Amino acid sequence: MFRKKTALVLMTLMTVTAAFLSGCGSAKTNDGAANSNSSTAQTAAAKPVEFNFYFTGSQNVKDLWDTLIPMFEKNNSEVKVNPVYVPPGTGAQPTYDRISAAKQANKGSGEIDLYEDGLSSVTQGQKDDLWDTLDGGKIKNLANVDATTLKDISNLAVPFRSSAVVLAYNSEKVKTPPATLDELYDWIKKNPTKFAYNDPSTGGSGNSFVMTTLYKFLPEAAIHNSDPSIEKDWDQGFALLKDLGKSVYGNGIYPKKNQGTLDLLTSGEVDMIPAWSDMALEQIAKGQLPKTTKIAQIKPGFNGGPTYLMVPKLSEKKEAVYQFLNFVLSPEAQAVVVNKMHGFPGINLSSMPQDIQDSFKGASEGFRTFNIGDLDKDMAKRWQSDVAAQ
Image (cartoon, rainbow, N blue to C red):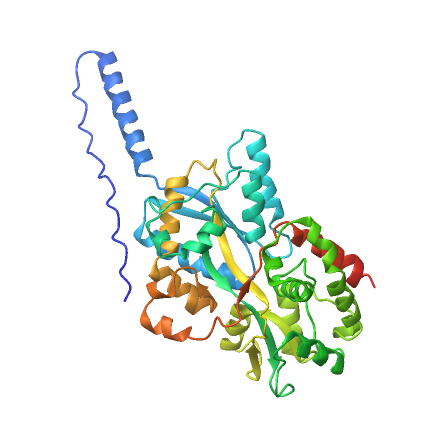
């Protein structure tokens, strides 16, 4: 069993002594005012500190926070988390823009105290000086996070969970899945309309397929290069994606969102898709995907990586947020990430119970993390013109 956090003890309200009645009416009034002020102050002291947490993602992300937040509040009654869910497809950019605009207008953090998003928001926020620098003195469980991962993002975010993009396929139709990118491209051409990937601007699995294809023709180090000069080297990858267009689902139809391609696999309209490992495993477990659905990773692997929690530097609720983040990085909370989302934990596996450590043996093989910064936006725009519009 995980050790539960000991609940903090709230200050007990003091009983107010009844005012001594005197012959002076003004004295009675003053005593009443004093008692009223004292009661108001004590009530304010007992009120939980409430902070706003903005996040987006598929239903499984909402389900995760619907589980973790009550767990935290049960043992931390002095803090209340106000979750603000931004449905997928509406985009997280308006949330980022709100934080940025508030800073420029000297209006704090725009009443956003915690923000969940991907690496691009971490790096952009670093340029815009939006994020608080996090340290182990305030968040003890940061010590359980891989130090290299934190260094890569200059300690500006908490990588609280990870996932990889894999191939999800119908094992009745696909007896031997492709093992390499070249084998995958060959399979797509030999099985026209039976492979689908989503518009890369609407979901990470399609984004991963596009990005992995572009960087197939570049040196391995390029996946950590955010210099715009590298965009000229994307030509060969975009030519390949354009050529594949006539062989993918609908001879060039690209579903919206990660779930869009999963729905096509469920209905049997396609036999193979790139998918987030956590989404695929969860839907297989719940029977939402056919029992014949299996997953496999190719070599070199599709890109995946952590999802991050960022604290706006100008938030006025940072101490309460730190308390919540410390809980999120606890083995107890991370077990929920693993069991509920089928994701990789954000903390080192050595900090997790042995059964969870054993369950991940070999699971991260081929896992790669890309960091191309703002180039991701340029990639999506060019895909629209070079591939989708053809």
